[in-house]
Image (tube, rainbow, N blue to C red; front, side, top):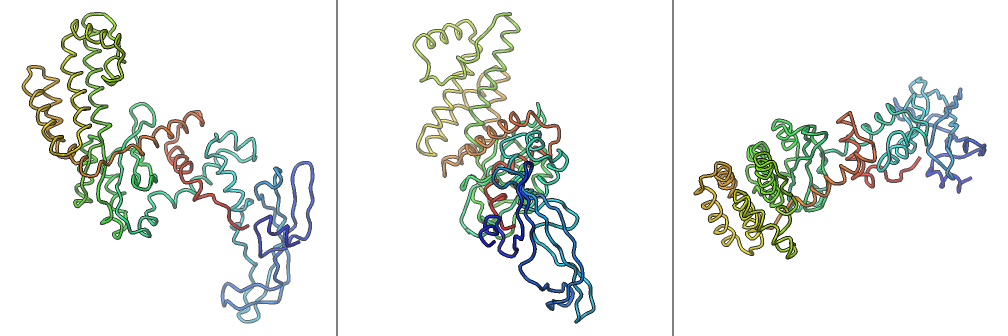
Length: 400
């Protein structure tokens, strides 16, 4: 029977009987020892005076549902006169599923919907949700790996849409490409609470924090981690430029009642074909208000192609001077924004740190939403995201 025990992942139990039916594979299991340790006095007892058989779901074996009929004995301790039942660490009291079964069901959720888990395992949505939170919660905002490695790393903080303008905040280790957790909102007090929960041994290891142009993130990091150098991700600078161009484009469309293409302004200058370049020139002649917006975006892109911080500083100074010297309120506001965030924008050239990993995680989160046909419960969404990125750590094979 030892080979069967190894197949089940158990070295402490014996399989006394195995039955295969049309519906499931059933194993009758009992403890290998004839004795049990008293939980009160820690002495080993030999006096058993009762039996109870528990029926437990244990995942799948040979692509069929596996059921364990576990014989649980009752003992009497002669040392302390205490009556107790032998315990099994693979299932808690009153539960009808082993830890292996829970992990297999939740593992199914990593790239599938809750309904697929119900069809395959016969487990309800509410039970899957409870198991998901139970198994994932301990690994959210866990910095034990950083504590163990004791190496400097860069912290990434970004935001992504949960539904429409309802945003959640993502936090990750950019250096090791690990998502650490997802906040339910972008509130400053919630972010500060998470940053304060980082172990004191880990905080000095954070050398940089990459954020977008959100004052809440900036203030939270400055208050909790004052030693950390803050970097504004260059992706968000260009994204902000494209957003400003698009805003002006829509205003001009409303004024002139004519369609102005968007793609021609968001595409990189060097990627435009000759016909597209000519078309862009014609549009700018027709709508000169767009010229400065588009040129500023391209100047920002040129700035990010420079090799040194000194050259980037000069580029940014000239861009800000040009914007603030115009008579367009939107351009002046843009120049003031770049001036206010200038030191954090220029910190990019110290180590060239970006939030590229976090943006990749956001794409994965959007895919999870599509696979799951959307979410109404934000907590379930957050835990399912964490499951998908931590599945190898959380749901690895364990003993029975």
